[in-house]
Length: 414
Ligand SMILES: Cc1cc2nc3c(=O)[nH]c(=O)nc-3n(C[C@H](O)[C@H](O)[C@H](O)COP(=O)(O)OP(=O)(O)OC[C@H]3O[C@@H](n4cnc5c(N)ncnc54)[C@H](O)[C@@H]3O)c2cc1C
Figure 1 (cartoon, rainbow, N blue to C red):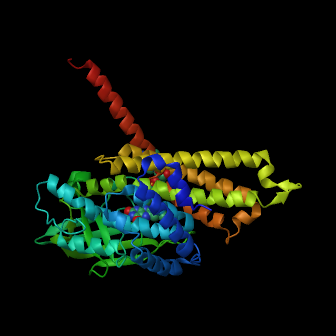
Figure 2 (figure 1 turned 90 degrees about the horizontal axis):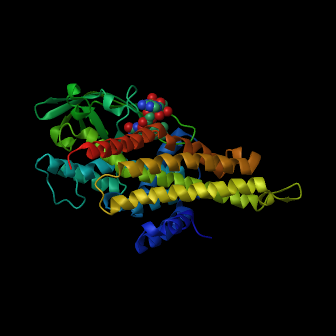
Figure 3 (figure 1 turned 30 degrees about the horizontal axis):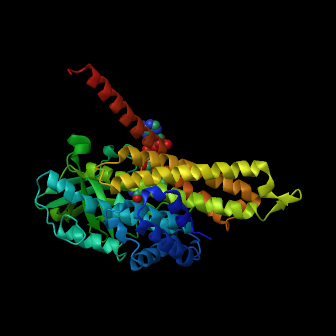
């Protein structure tokens, strides 16, 4: 039987190169053979230990390498396969990408700002300090994290209040970050803080803060129903050398948004992975379970559900790989395509997983059932890296800007 990632790759064949098909097969086999059989952590403490082990496993297998390469489609294929096998393994991949991508993209902003950027490192990060951490994130020997959200700054991330005050050759950080994945287990945090509160989003800068830095404190876990290391961290007079700034001062918010732009299609891919696993479980059940003297799959009400699930999954995959393909083809920004993919795929996956639970009936809500785990895991995808509502606002803003430009163009001189 084909793995979910191979099936997905066939659906979006038009957006892939030959080496992607080979990757889909390999990563599908890895996820089915080495990730899926691992048992789900029983609680938050176990999830934290398991996340560390998974980071090592993904690093050793070379699965994190594409994060550092201009191959977003490869990242999507990997997340799709991991998410189908284990939402926690997918989250581990996602956080290495979120923590590492700002380091990868910073030199672009350095160059635009005319700042000297130490180039020539294998992995392309701006400073030697950043390059060292990026290599470790990509080989799985260090766990990354992306610390933007605060108790009072969620969707409105530009309103963050964590302060990074310049004092001589150092920045001193003070503030609190909330809902941070890998809080407490990360080796290094990519942190967004304000260097100039009066400048709003243009006063936000990005920093790299290793765990263990004096003044950085793990406040405690925020426990989810689907095991996933999440928590709060605080900065209390946390002094770091200016070399640990990532990208130009005041360009941190832009760097954060560029990172989300790049990674939202991979969230969509994870949603496709969870949805395809749910559909597979539903199909397996519908072809085995008999009620009223016939297989569930023989009932038209069940067939209608299966048909709807399959259409939504293919549509989600097409939007996902369209966005990743655009990026790989050299598009500078894919904001619109990434938001469409993320909004559609995560909403569709939620409905597909819910339908799968319904088809499995009582068995679908048993804690040991794969679809119950997916049901708990899929929900957060509609929230993190920008909620569905925020994606809709981004899409509408693009449409309205285009419409306004078109209008003003027609009124202008020929
Ligand atoms: C599992 C998980 C992992 C996470 N990991 C990280 C991480 O690693 N790093 C990090 O920085 N953050 C992380 N987050 C935080 C995440 O990015 C935020 O939860 C998200 O941005 C939403 O912010 P909020 O929770 O404060 O909700 P709010 O912003 O308070 O929004 C609440 C509701 O209001 C809606 N809303 C808000 N503004 C508008 C508007 N203008 N129009 C219409 N509706 C609106 C939202 O869509 C949402 O439905 C994580 C969250 C989760 C659940």
